[in-house]
Amino acid sequence: MVATGKVWLWPKGFSLYGYNEIFDDTRIWRGYRNTILYTTLGTFVNLLFTLPAAYALSRREFRARRFLMFVFVVTMFFSGGLIPTYLLIKGLGMTNTMWVFIFPFCVNVYNLIIVRTFFETSLPRELYEAAAIDGCGHFRFFWSVALPLSKAVISVIGLYYAVAHWNDFFTALVYVRNNELQPLQIVLRDILRSNQVFQAGAGTGGEAGGYAQRYADQIKYGVIIVSTLPILLVYPFIQKYFEKGVMIGSVKG
Image (tube, rainbow, N blue to C red; front, side, top):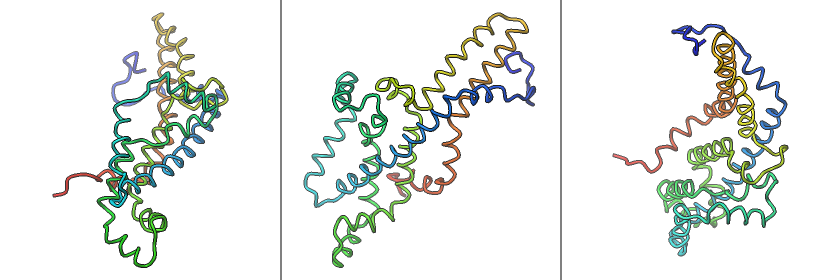
């Protein structure tokens, strides 16, 4: 209707054709299953590596922290390139496995810097000194004191990692050839490619072209909703932490 100029303000011709075509494809459920698994497990592994590393780099008594932080930051500007990375992952035996989505890129340096800054600015040094007097070591302090006080930054970083995993398609394009392991984004891409037959029909003009364009648009926009709705449903539950977390590092005045 939009393509033919018949819609001005109020929608016309309500139809679920696009969603029916998408969900009738059995690949969509396999893609959902894989993506939910990769997102859940991948986010857990990301936090498992990022949080302890950020805590260690935030401790002033850790003498090597400046050098290690410099090494991490260098990787933000220089990388080995796609071919050496592919050869490395292939040598590790991770191609065509689910683990290629989990372990090779488990720490994002930008997120690491955010968490390290939070630990440095929001956890007073006196808090650790008081805990140390009672016999609390770094491991106990990190688990029993630092993490409970860091719900805001954990929620924000967890959301960043989860969205990155949910939207990740490049990893599957490069490292995965097994259709059973393909994530949702690749499945949706394949559906859009098969949808081109409708778009080709739209170029014929006339009434048939109008119908073809309408169906093509319904599938295209339906794919957008299918791919983003789960993340939108999760966001309200962590919104209060997200609002606090995005202010980390801001100028206070």
